[in-house]
Amino acid sequence: MFQKAYFYPLFAILFWAGNVIVSKMASHAISPVAITFYRLVFALAVMSTFVLIPTWKNRHIIRQYWKHLALGGFLSVSLFQFLSYQAATTTTATNMAIVTALIPLLTIILSTWILKDQISYGLVIGGFLSFYGILYLLSHGHIAQVFSQGMHLGDGLMLLAAIGYALYGVLLKRWKMPIPAWQSNFVMSNFAILYVLPFFIFLPASQMQLNQQTIPLILYASIFSSILLSYLWIEGVRHLGPNKNSIFMNLLPVFTALIAVVLLGEHLQVFHLVGGGLTLCGILLAQIIQKPIQWKKSKQQSLDSL
Image 1 (cartoon, rainbow, N blue to C red):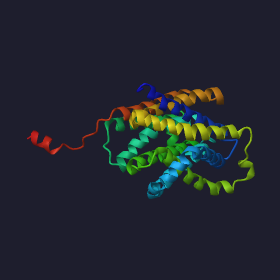
Image 2 (cartoon, rainbow, N blue to C red):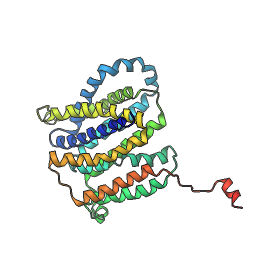
Image 3 (cartoon, one colour):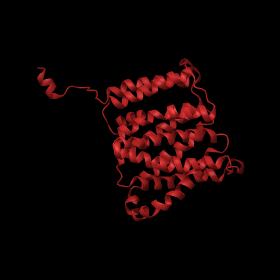
Image 4 (tube, rainbow, N blue to C red):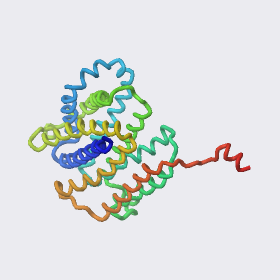
């Protein structure tokens, strides 16, 4: 059973890679606001069939945490998805996946600040290595250009999305809401659609049309990304724990790059392999080496040294 549990995060990441590809395919076919809105509508319609009644029965507990759920819906659903679709218009699917794979490392960094977690050797070494790898990737192997010309808009938007999602994960750990994961996801999605709705209403009709090209993309984003991915990730955390489960995030650039080569005709360059490899190695170091840095000797150590 323990070995079978690895299939939960494995398929979750595979669906996540598919979502990155869908984001890229939708970037010139439909507005980021429109696909975010339609995705939420379809996902909520499906989830309502099995989550609506339990959520209503648990409304007294949910009401106590509505502000937390409102913020979570903004960070994890509306902001992350909108920025991802917007980023896809100006960067490659491979770049998007590599930047997204920074989420576990960003989560660790934010945990040391918000939750006062101890800084580990893996975080320091892995953080510097991943930072260098990202600079190498985004500059196409010429790091000096990042400081002189800046990064591409799409890469910057994807990094902002990853930071927001990492912050969401840290806040979930801090809040410790006694609400089942499905109900939390359902309520946060409802808040998210409220955030998107005002922007959707004022979209030109040409940017919100449903057709043979956009409907399959919306259905994938709704069913496979919003529902099945969430279920598989939750089950992975339950069986493996959050640390082991998050390591599978390192496979996202691999799966995405392979799919992008086949479906989008993207070409892997040397800077993808070098920059992406350094970034993933840094992330792995941060996750595996958990020994905390001892900044000061304890009182007992000080007495023993006398």
